[in-house]
Length: 368
Image 1: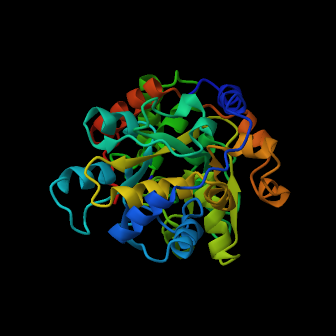
Image 2: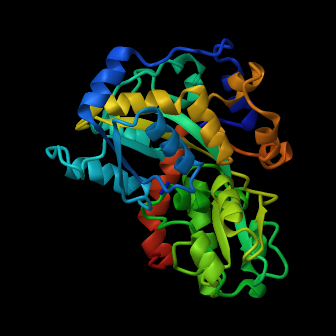
Image 3: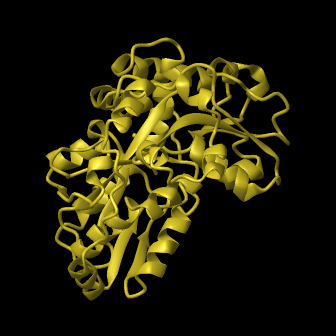
């Protein structure tokens, strides 16, 4: 599965300029009753070890036991989510998603195609303006930075930067955490590789990233397998390029078997924002709205933070003393984020077009 801003300073500044008073509004009794009457919420592409979603879903079920959560294709990518809505727009059955969690570039695309309906949660003012649609069709939920997850049983010398991955020591070891023709995470992994070569963000970085993976593939270092904690543990993909929060969650899941290391590279530190949206054709629109209220509540935001993600309301909540220190301490060092680059929406779009359009012809590796 599963990305706008010119710098980490810009995004944190935008967050700090959000309303400082933490909203305490609860969903209305009318919304809760309408959602419970629908009785179901259909999600898609939400692995339980992604951004703490297992706990977030569990807390929603506990709060609203009358609503069944129907989880579709947890391992789908952002493009798959888009297609699932298109394919089921006339279908009110269990295969029609109510909500999506997609990379930044997909939010405006889905709005333009009429696939999303607007909704503004009670805590709307604390979502930075820079990462939300003014009309409420999509809104930023969390962000992280691109990192390397490394199996230390098989990789003795941990790569510290993108250029290291080209060394012969890593033959048959490097994988992406998705298909770069459809997965937002993988698409931005290619962009990060381009940024590490000092390419201009956007199309140029996308093209430079493709050239990097072309060389990685030609050297025999690239593995055309979608990297997950299981493939890493089995030795099929000893080094995986993935979001830091997914890598840290995998580290917890593996619990030392095998021992792993999570590395934020020295160059090409790319930050990525994901966004939420409600399908314009949602069979359960009220349950979808209630789900959004849950995600953007204090409880929901802290649930993502427990999964190592920086939630959209992070700075406002920290300022209000609502974030336990142990959750802050569990995140990668602040220095890892100081060098992070937040691409603009235009840059994300240009990169996406370059990568999805050029992967087959430039790299030629069928990732699956």
